[in-house]
Structure formats: structure tokens, C-alpha cells
Image (tube, one colour):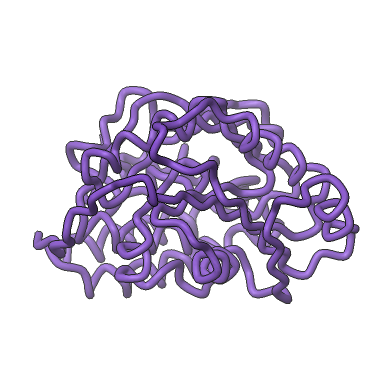
Length: 289
């Protein structure tokens, strides 16, 4: 597996960080996400307070008015239904930070999130992630991503070839590395898995084992969808095609996605969320140990 060599940044007083939040019709949840950014513990003195950008992807619930009234410091970007991946890309293009953090509008950061991940970049990391605790309101079975006994710093790429062990809200990346990797693909499902595969194939991950993010899996989450089965099948087709272009992969990696697809065809009608897919794949021995 070859990795792209990127010049180590020299962090100084001018180093800036940006946080990008894509959102659509989640005014109340978005307010909670923003408050969690503003409640972050202090970070190293040479980092400025985070620049916050909300990409409002066609909301009709008063999101813009709420931002103007309650969070005037937030940079507002308007898009029209382009989806979470392209919305994150739009925020990244407008961001002024040297390091880009991401937060979904229905997630929150624990107060130590920035404080925990920034040391990775002080040490010269290209990208970093921590653990996320997931409140599962669909069936009540809470979980963490990645599992608590997984150390992603050792074999992030090989694990990512079997299952997506990262989430955008627990992830940060140097701005130059983000654009070198092409940003998030323009697809409604699996855009994060596709992007993280690209990064893990070519860059070294700095993994923080602490849980610094809280996510909520609810009925309106993209990962709990009435067209779940078909969306998963489409996602797996895209992943299978993408894997063929990555360094350090072979036919066995594409076969893995065919095996996952077979599982979906056999059992997917009974699933209510992406977590049901993960549970079935783990029981079938199709996730990383």
C-alpha cells in the first residue's frame, strides 16, 4: 500500500481551525450541535477559536432566522438539496481554517473533542478521528463507532475495506489533505465510507481512543431509511467500484463487497437501520475482527 507524501505543516500562531456543519430542516438539533462547539474546552494557545460554518442545504423550518438571531458569529452558506457530502465540500471551500473539523447537525461534541484531536496535528498528522457514542432511538441498542476494543491507528485501511469504522462528526483533516483526496463524493449514501477509504489508503490516521462525540440514530436519520435495502445495495456497488482504483487492494476486496451485497439481498428486508446491517454482517463474519 503506497501513501501520498504530504509535507508536514509547521503550526504557528496563525494556525486556524474550522468546523463545518451540513444541515437541512433540523433547526432545534442544529442549535444543540452549535452549543457543543461553543462549549469546547480551551485548545493550545496558538490555535484561534474555531471558525464555524453552517451549510444550510435548503431548509424551510426557519434555520436561517435562528442562526441570525442566536448564533450571529456563524458563517452561513446556502445550498439547495445537494446532500451531506457536497454540502460539506461547499463548507470546506468557504472555510478559512488550516484544519477542518466536521459535525453533523444531529450530533454533539463532548467538551474535550477539540482538545483531544488537535494534538494529532501538532505532531504532524494528516487526519485524525476519535470514538463516537451512538444513542440508538430506533431500537434502543446503543453502540460505539468504532467498537471500544478497536485501535484504528494500527490497521485503519484494512478495517475500512471491510466496514466503515469512522464517522464525520469524530473526524478532522488538514485542509490540503482534504482537497488532495477530492473531498466527499456526490452520493447520498456511503459518501463518508468512500472518502475515508481514499484517505486511509494514502495517508496515516492519528486515532484518539476516547469517546468525544455523541450521535443520535433516530427515525429521520439518513442511516434509518424506508428505502434502506436499495440504498445499501447502491452504496455497495459504488464501494466495490471505488476499491478497484485504490492502492494495496486486490480481487478479494471486491469480493468482500459482493458478499455484503448477497447478505443484503437475503436479509435486508427485515432491517430498520444501518446498525442492523452491521450486526448481520458481524454475525456473518464479514466485518473486521
